[in-house]
Image 1 (cartoon, rainbow, N blue to C red):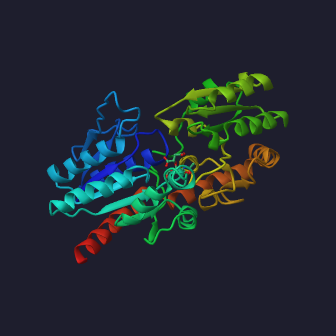
Image 2: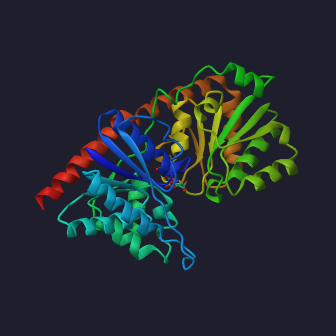
Image 3: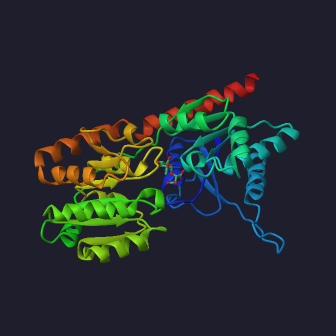
Length: 379
Ligand code: GMT
């Protein structure tokens, strides 16, 4: 198929899922056109089946806010017309589903019908999308898509409970490249970070408030208080980084903590990790947790959102109530001091990650594309 994939160019979340999907689909012979305002972080391939199209927005003195949604819709029209797209798959409803609806209407006037699939990822539903300033348009645009997917059962429920959507929503979870995300031997790296064989605790996020990075630091401080020799590696960057750095200074734990910034090869850090922390206040799936589990790292997470669909209590790690630092620190202590428990959780984590393997999940997207395309032909 000729497929247009529209996404944000982010290091994590929907941007990564969309880009990895593009790469796998291209490897299976589909012609993929990725559309974004910047080259997505993970679009690091020269595969001839993938082309990247940048949405350029011309500014004008009148515009305090250049109309990105319109520039995007216009680019979509170009792609549909000149690249003969069979389907447009937009990731994150806002404003992508709206631009797609507009592009579809424009093409309909020209006698061309193109199915639109919208994948709901997270804050497009749980936070930004339901904000009264966007809600009506988001609701309308999702409902007008020809097919809608959500990354977890939790997100599907949230969508129905906060929006008046009549469309069926198919759950297709996040997926993982098991060959890339696997524990590999990084003994030099481990030795450099932990010269005395310290345990390694890792957190990866965009450091937004919702990720609770200060909680990660608090849990780690308690791990040290329990007398465990450990290092905390924080991967990523964002609004709460300075707060977390200050917290480390206030707690006097800077020498045990490393802020690594945004990294492309997260799996290298995960390969030396003994424990992954994700205490998020909102998480529709938790791709970062899945990446850790795929590298055989036990996870301690909050028990909110879609995290219980990924991290299984007592099997792949533990789930605690939101902001329950004591719960997370106690489980961390047990995992880091009990080798048998650590081994069991690590093996289970990898086994669970295998259920989300990319070939299987991308196959679900391909079947869904066929289903949606067929429905449109039959209308
Ligand atoms: O807000 C974010 O963290 C980014 C957001 C996105 O849509 O880009 O991430 C969401 O999508 C990911 C991929 O489907 C999920 O794994 C994350 O759980 C989800 N984040 C939140 O719900 C906060």
